[in-house]
Each structure stands twice: as structure tokens, then as C-alpha cells.
Image (tube, rainbow, N blue to C red; front, side):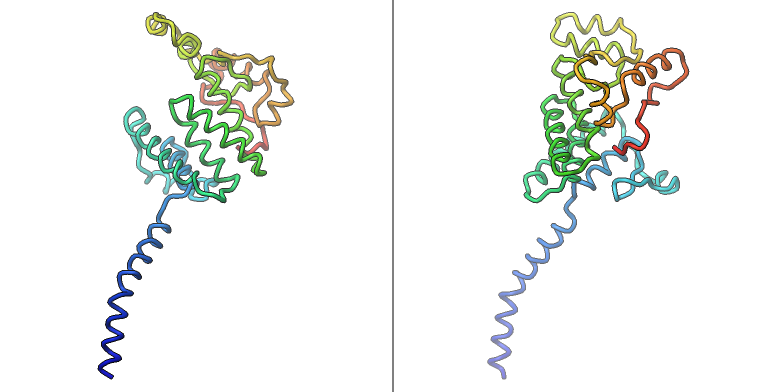
Length: 238
């Protein structure tokens, strides 16, 4: 009996570290962020009180308890940290169209043209996998990428101040900074080449037709709408 106890003790002495390692790995896996969780956090940092499902909204009572972060200092750092985590998750096989959709938003919220291109590729992959909700973000990431490299957007998803639009088109000019300071921040779609694609394709990608885009700009200038009241297509989830 004593021999059996000794053997049992030796076995447990050997197995205990193994069991602890397995439990630690299981815990790490269960607590690792998902692309959905990173997307929800990204949206909450931008004042959109998303619930954990990534679709519905939190109640006002719950939303009021969410932390707020400094837009200029803290949010960009948090964005970059989320992209680092997203890159690791994207390297794993078996992702769904929804996963790529969530990741596209994370990379769209960069300040780097390469990240916008990555975001567009991710959104395109989401559509290819049958996740139609990614149509708008696919269009928006392409527009943002084009403008960031000094080209003109084609869908009409990017609204910004006239001064920043000028900067995007002339960012390599030596005197762009001085001219930027003297220009208005009135909302515009420029730089824009609306003739490249027809409205039928815009609508297919959940983007309002050109007439609605131009009407919004006119209404903002007339004081009838706020710049943030961007036109959207009814019954088009994005």
C-alpha cells in the first residue's frame, strides 16, 4: 500500500505542472480578445455604445457608465493597440466574413494609407465570404485610401473640411501648410471623381446616390443640417 502511495505521489508531482500549464493556456485562450470585441471597443471609443453582440445598442444607463478617452491623445494609441491584436488574430485560419468585417473598421481608423488598403482588402474578403453587411465599409475604405494617396474618391463616402481636402490633394507641395491655415473647413466631398461609377453601383454598396450627397452638402452650407447628419440609404445595414 505504501508503494502505491509513493507511485501516486510521484505521478501527481509530474502531472501537476502539466495540468497547471494546460489550465493557463485554456484561460488565456478564453480571455483573448476577439475581432468582434475589438470592434465593439473601437466603436465605444467613438461614442457609439454598442452592446457586446456588435449590433444592438446599450441602454442609456449602461452607456453612461462607459469610460471616455481623449480623442487626440488616448484614442489613437488605443486604436493602434487594437490593430496589433487584430493582426495576430487575422493570421489564424478559419475566420468568418463577419470577422473580416470587424477587422476592416479597425484598420480604417488608422492614419496610414497602407492600413486603409488593408481595410479595403479585409472588407472585400468579407463580401466574398457572403457577409453583405461589409458592402459600405468596402466602399468607404477604398475612398479613404484613394484620398490619402492624393487621388479622388469615387463612391462619395468621405466628407471633410475644404482645408483638409486641399491638403490631401497637395500634401507634397512645400507651401501646403501655409495655404491650409487660410482655407475654410466647410464640408466638402472633394477630392472626388463622381463620374467614374454610376449611382446603381453606389446603391449596391449602400452608398447614397450623388444627388443626395450634394443635397447634404448644400443643406449644411444653408444651416439646415449638421455636418454629422450624413445621408444614408434606408433599410441598408452597414
